[in-house]
Image (cartoon, rainbow, N blue to C red; front, side, top):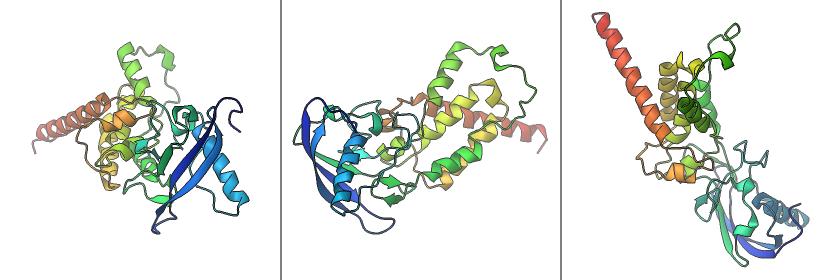
Length: 263
């Protein structure tokens, strides 16, 4: 587990402990003899092994791929989503960025729409419901021509690829003072709206996803940029502008359709 070479660190972890809706609290734990080559989650594994050996409840946290791809991991480290290193998920964060003797405060995402399940784990199924409402392509493509035959301008392809890098970890929500999900939703809207396959239902998609986002209780966007700054994949605020244009265009088309019907 973790690296065996390099400097060994002794740290203090101030961890939020909570189960469901019960009242939570911070509890201090010693993390001793941690290799600076270990990842942050490997450090927590080591601490949890010690807790289990002492008959204590291990610290609960989400993880899966541990390669910065799945978006499962994520919590606040000293007030920063995913920790102090930019464009890095918790699972890719290494202990060498911390100093020996440092105290690290670990908290779950703080957002009404992400209720705490246990300790550092939160329920992010609100994101799943937003995706279900429109973050997909439903057009029948069974007999469509090969995608490689469809010319796509490189700027559009690059922008779509960048937006598609969103892993849905929730750092944008946790870092926003309003707990807004605009960066997440706009990334999903943008990467589909920019590609030919997604343009067929682009307006229905943006309306459904934004409506679901609002229903899930996420806050409003005030364009402070903290979401993009905290995003481990560097998702651009330009996606929010793109989503707003999609909504405006949808409203214009609706108005013209109504006027065209003489209503």
